Image (cartoon, rainbow, N blue to C red; front, side, top):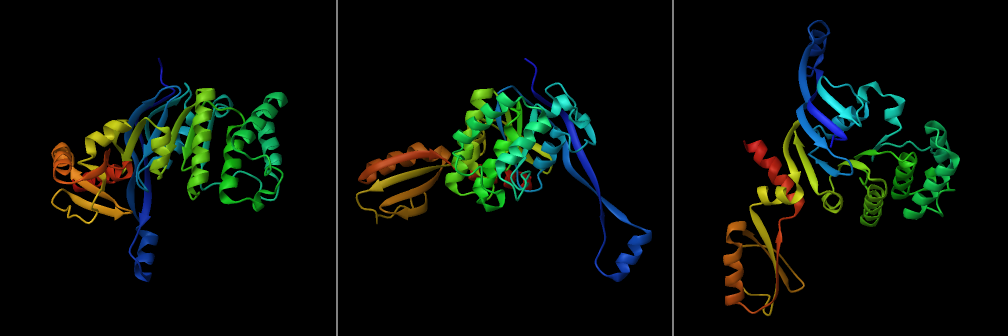
Length: 326
């Protein structure tokens, strides 16, 4: 089966002027300007199959947004090959653009002073969506995101979370097969994040859409993505199952236990992370988990004990720190 998204040795380099501060340096730069070559994306390769939801993770400046812009045709690669749905994105053909969407959490496409319904109608005209299909899809999305009482309000009167839901509806009205989502839940409260995640999952299920998602919220990744690609300084550090990432890079496990005597000394069992409401959280080396658990159950009166993997965001931080130290 051919991949929906296929990237081979994709790179994007920029030449950025640089100089020291001060008047003298500014005059010198007029005649002898120096440039720094910045490798925003540095020869990455990966494929995404139909219906996959893939987390594309990395710190600020890692190359995530640059990659999504190249995939959507907004930027031309410096080198390498990229194919989405059999199209070369940089040509931005109409047939290609009708099958993809790019949602950026910090960018707006809705008309500020008009109700969202008017912007939805504009999207229908831009994409040439048949009226019956448009109304059916629009009403379906409004119901899924609970927007019925909001679509007639001017966009400027909506909250950030409400606007973001409207933006997502507008971006998906043409039923794209491929979704490039760049921080779609940024700045939203926990409840709104959860609703948007549920909607993305439902859209993926109903339309077998392929999704490439960037997010700094690990809850988004854990809820939606089985596979993750980790990028740092424009290069891929990891590509595989989220569970394998945790197993490969996490060096500890978390033990959460309730004790008959919560004031007992536990530092000789592991690192005490927290004590709250009679429940204690310990961090112990992964290789010693079984041994420490047996000791706790033998030495103390334990009412309840659970063993969990390290939080995914801690694992990601560990991946980056290991790369920086290398």
